[in-house]
Image 1 (spheres, one colour):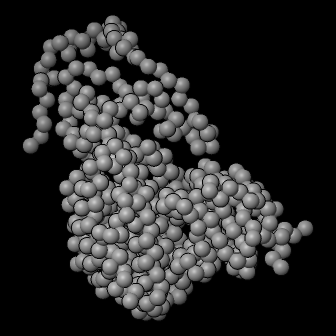
Image 2: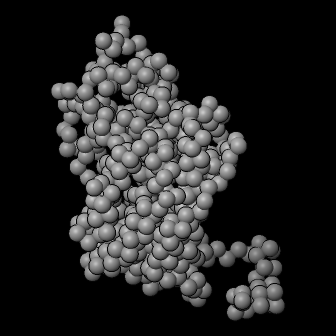
Image 3: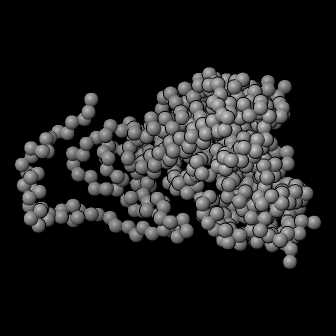
Length: 360
Length: 140
């Protein structure tokens, strides 16, 4: 059902009368007289251009956003003059600590400046030189298939929450839009990788599906952010680095490097967002840790899945490099959780126990 | 005259290359990090801002660096040799390949966010080292 405006503008005689007065040259200009604050926004570093941080001055800056938004539920941009009776757009994420990261504006700018286009920026023809055995060729296409699934779900997840977020947090909303683009690019690039040449998609992976379902069905935005930005993208960054390490040609080296690069921005936002939340509302730490206990169970399922493990073994030339990948990825993920203010998760997480069984 | 590797002169020459090859670095996007390269008993600091290297130094304050790439002289020389011979590092000699499993180049870091800057800006950092292909080097 569509929203219906409270009045029929086409039958409003006052609107027509006003229109005629304006067209005859009688300008009211009351909107101009009500302008309050002017700032001097200029690029602080000319080579960087005019950034969001440059224009975040005075009342337009995020430091004036209250912890709980009660004054604006409309489409009005932060700092604009709010007439009475603006419609509510029904936002549900109205607490600053629930969404905010001081790094969000810079990460948004960085993400745009480091953009790349799979169609032209990957030297696809380098794949023609081969470098893989038939089994390794199938393995890399299998891994690409899983990365397509991850990209698709991580396009949906920010979309699910972005529309519920108050416009006062526009920098975070911009960043979420960029996350959608970044995720769509992961799906695009690795679909192209899987299908290039005499290509094929691999088998969909049920444990990965379970993990992704847990991530996307996170009940709150902070839990969704923790499970996608922090947990899932720790794995994606690790896979990107391993993909480049295992690459036998320039195309795969670039693909792995770009995947790790883009994943690292998700990680940066996730760590700063959660650290900010936990610092302001320490009780949230328990909720987040409880959620990650469940998510990490899903991670164990995926790390142990044949559709992930066997292709990794084939591409890596044996068990040791894969064990080392798992060990490093889990260690670095635990360090990120600590940096995010979640404390030492090693004692409660199922991941160290899983790792010990793998290594022994 | 050939530039010795490793040396402060080498890193100053690479710094200059980020201006001479500005379009390449601008296409790769913003890069804001300070990192180190350790070889045997020397530590060099490399500072990036926006698109370019804005400073290099010998003996920087390690606590102010996001991460340090640490390896022996022969490992670094082999990497640079590969860059010179192939017009950029081949797949076996990229910074990621050499550091990924921690067995050739070690990545030293104090905090997780500083460490992740290596991967956030890897394309720029790799390009920085790949510019060595344009230098006349003494790798003895």
